Amino acid sequence: MSHLPVIVGFGGINPAGRSSFHHGYRRLVLDQLDTASQAETLTSLASLMRLTRYDNGQYHTQDGQAFEMSHIASNLKEQLCSNTLIRRIHPDWFDVKNLMLNKVANVTGHTGELVFKLRNRHLPNHLPANWQVKPLSAIESEVRINGGTDVIFPDYRESAVQSAGMLPTGFDPSVLYQSRNHPRGLQMSVFAASDALQSVGIDFKSLASQLSPDQIAVFASNSIGQLDDAGFGGLTKFPALGKRTSSKQMPLGYAQMPADFINAYLLGNVGLTGGALGACATFLYNLKSGVEEIRSGRRKLVMVGGSDAPVTPEIIEGFRAMGALAEDKYLMALDNLSSLQDDDYRRACRPFGNNCGFTMGESSQYLVLMSDDFAIQTGAQIYGAVGDVYVHADGHKKSISAPGIGNYFTLGKAASFVRSLLGEESLKERSFVQAHGTSTPQNRVTESHVINETAKAFGIHDWTVSAVKAYVGHSQGCAGGDQIMASLGVWQYGIIPGLTTTPEIAEDVHQSHLHFPLTHQQIKPDQMDSVLINAKGFGGNNASAVLLSPNATEALLTKRYGQSEMQAWKQRNESVIEQAQRYDLEATRGLNRPIYLYDHQVLTGEDLQFSDMEIRLPGYAQPVSIAIKNPYDDF
Image 1 (cartoon, rainbow, N blue to C red):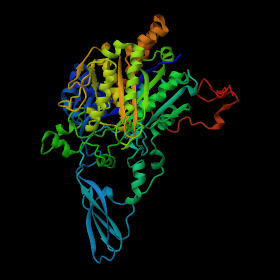
Image 2 (tube, rainbow, N blue to C red):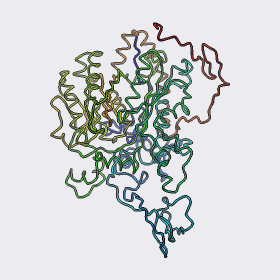
Image 3 (cartoon, one colour):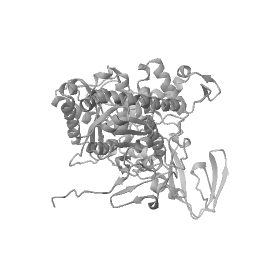
Image 4 (cartoon, rainbow, N blue to C red):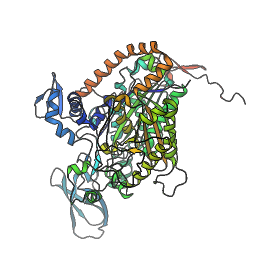
């Protein structure tokens, strides 16, 4: 019997805010929500962005004003909305008006003094003997250099790309725990994984006590590693700037660290771990690993996730040089503008419309999966299930970054799976697609052709296609996580996020069997049984995942376990929901902190009870069996 991987918790952080309890999803469709839901999500954002603090039953703003939750929406809504989702790059990330370039000049034999101004943050840690520095302000100094050395002169220019999907302005994961100079992507991982874990509503220790340690697994990574100054970015550029390389930049730069951190500092996991890499399909690659382990029965509890923080000058410049990003000059040309205003930057990403490149985003997302039997046993929440994930390469390629044929196989298999499991009517009438939707001219043609041809083959008319990158940008390896979070909320609120930044569908988009809603699409939550999550990645990495709705999942589990067992699950589920809602309230008020267990119950070999059949660990009720049967008994 194959076990169904049930989604029992999810969380994260992206430009829409905190993901758990659908807060990030609700930011996407904010104006379609009732007043109470709007107030909850705006309050959650205000706490994240450090615009309010909760004390004695009231929220207090930075200037000392006291508000009830219901008043935050009316007083802070404009500020909260303008500092979330895609927008002009904020100086907290980097100064788009002053990007530094280094130019080397030889002043050997120069008889006088060379004088120039330099930003303080660009001064070397150890000044050469022939440098004299005079501070001019808090950010700038005058530098005088005698001849006889090569000098790196800083040169500044304006960034050609000035829009990005950034985390809510003011949110800083490093202040929420002992971050110890962690790269930003790993800071986000700690917050996101903790958010997901606490959203489950069951203490992890309680869950772990019911399992053998090797029935737990973590699969997480990102597509390009940690490339800010605290990771590989600083490792490679600090020597040229005269800065000291630290002992942390090398190990913390690796792309598998979003899994390693969760194992070491949240779960204490000694079971299976892994981090698959597949460019933009990375999250779905890790999800595939988790699904296969649960379906096989080898694991009962799996965390799947990822974290990418690519809003840095270097990464943006790299993608711009490829011609992949929406540069300001091209955005102006699209709308025949002479300059860009704030609202124009918010519309930088236009999936399946007349567009000019994708918009960089940052995000960290995690899912908590359980096998169906363990979910029923524990009374866990059921947000849906992952039916399967399909992965295919592109075959022979001319350009390594160009799309190919692999996505036809993955999406075709995903559609076939839905038809096989839920029936032809369900596929045709009660499914939709969360597209990769990067907002590049090439993607709008190639992906629309893949989806349209799949719809034709399966007799689907007006297949609804959504694309969350319109709101949050492209978070690289974590993009699939953003797509999943934007889809889970549909089953709670009945709103499929529309392509609201796209004025009209481009003429070269294939759409004979598709429906691209340019406004939010209202449905009945039980009207959709499944969503197909699609990813097309550089290098020929393609993946498509099938998510099943809570109703469809419960119907399948009722067939397997019967009405009486499902009724017992519902009774156990009541206390789980209560505990999860307590966490949501604390997080909304800004009172909760991420789980971060540094130097906590660290074990050595001497702590283990070791035999030729099993190993017992302190703190775990059940042992790890090492009684391995020969899998090749026919030899």
